[in-house]
Image 1 (tube, rainbow, N blue to C red):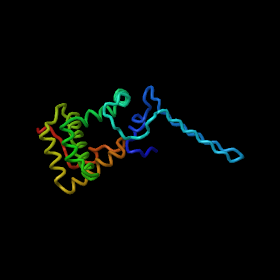
Image 2 (cartoon, rainbow, N blue to C red):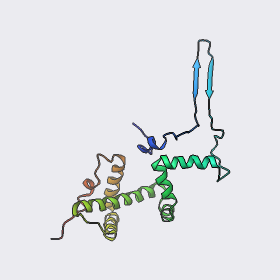
Image 3 (cartoon, helix red, strand yellow):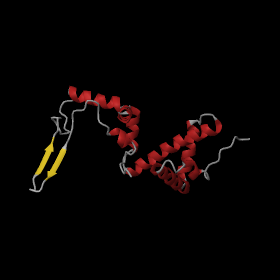
Image 4 (cartoon, rainbow, N blue to C red):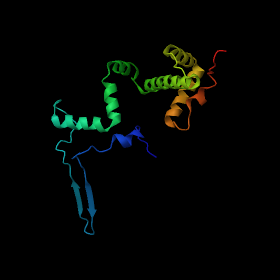
Length: 176
C-alpha cells in the first residue's frame, strides 16, 4: 500500500530524467573481519537546493526536461503561473481545513456539471451550479454530508460515488 500523498502520481512524478547523470549508489559490504565499505557516487557536483543564479543553463535545461517529460509538473507550472489561479490560491488555500473545503467545492462543481451533462445532454449554467453548491453547503446537515462524501471519495475514488452519497439532497427532473 503506497501512503504517498501524491499516489498514484508519485510513481510518474519521480521517474528519472532522460540523460540524467545524477546517480547515488550506496554499497555496504560486511565481511567476517567486520570491514565496512560505503561508496557514494554522485556525479551531480551540487547537491544543495540553494540556487544563486536564475539563469543557470544546466538547471534551465534540466527543468525543461522535467516539463517535457512529466505531465504533472508541466500542468502544475502552467497553473501556478496563472494570475487568476494564484489569486484564488492565496485567498483559499490558507490552511488544511480551508484546502479541504475548497477542494470539496471544486469537486462538487465538477461533479454537478458532469452529472447534469450525463442526465440532460446539456451544459449546467455556472450560476445554477453555484446556487446548488451554496444551498447544499449553507445547511449544516447537508454541508457535513457533502464534506464527508467528497473527502471519502478522495480517499477511495473507485468505490465511493459522490452522487450516491448526496442523492437524497438532490433530484433532477425535466420540469414537466
